[in-house]
Length: 223
Ligand code: CDP
Image (tube, rainbow, N blue to C red; front, top):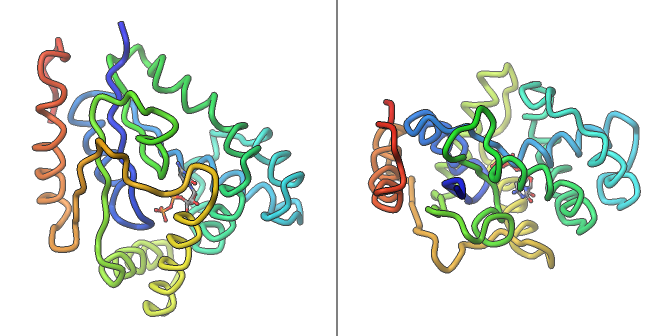
């Protein structure tokens, strides 16, 4: 049976990762943060003294990523985020990370009936056939504040205005690239979380996703 796929795309620090995790928990599905693949690639390049914009350096790092390091806080810094956006614009890097993402959704870990994956091109390129597609966005100042809090929690204190400028620049770079640009899929629903806290955003996401899964779930969802 084809697995159920919930695709959550969106802008930087829009809250798509938090929503994807909560949706995964609710339905009892595994969750893949595809951004971690690009961040791990970027970290690999930076750790070996390479240039994230150089295709050879970036592809070598993409082929050598250790997904066990996805929870390493080192990949969450804004410097790694900026480098991730550079490696992500290289077509060979995206090709090298494609199979990992497809395997995850085609054979969800743990034999689950479905999977949740978040990123920039999930609904457009990686899983155009996804069962449900969300595109998450929020005003830049709101996103910058959320990222500021997240970094502060990691002991990193940044100027919020500078963070906002970096997020806007990264989105512009992600939208402008030729390959798999950041873009709302034609059949995705926009969810603007500017005025929504985590619980309200999750309730809104669930209200959009649940009807698409109707009749496809055999076990009762948790949460
Ligand atoms: O957490 P945040 O929203 O800031 O970023 P992320 O989801 O971890 O992604 C970091 C960078 O990886 C993005 O700016 C994109 O350039 C790239 N990325 C991508 O190109 N395609 C994806 N499916 C996921 C991330």
